[in-house]
Image (cartoon, rainbow, N blue to C red):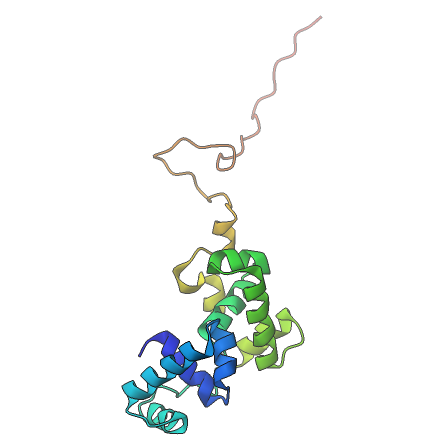
Amino acid sequence: MSAHQLDALRLVALGKTQSYLAREFGIDSKSIGKLMTEVFRKLGATNAPNAVLLACRAGLLADVLDNPLTARQHEALLWTAQGCTAQEAADRMGVSLDTVRWLLRTTHRRLGARSAAHAVALAMARGLITAADITEPPHGRQGPAEARGAPEPHPSPQRPSDARTAAPMAPATTTPERTAA
């Protein structure tokens, strides 16, 4: 089962409707119907409640109540926790600014958070994100510092150093001699 299909099944298990799924995934309700039919087929289920039961038995939904976030909501929250603005998160995720704002708004609502900082704190308290998630770039992408073009700590020996990577010059250890006038 694909991650997209599993996300849809998780949302169904959380009581979300197909129209909600269509909005969440940004596709029409007919496509959601096809997606869910494929999920049912893969699980051998006859309907949504049966699919949830079979998925729970197979261990596919063990985390559904512990993690109410979709993969994209989780990713947007990780970028926020790393210090990215909504626009920077949108650029890194390859989506629009409005999409990131929507993802963060729904993330806050699902976690019961009143602000972005509160959402990060709640997610960390629930174990949805860890300190390791924040120090490592999410999903193999650049972290905020690298993406902003932060200078490297040490210049590479293969290329000449530039103004951003050059080491500062050490102060002179001797004083110039004064000439008598």
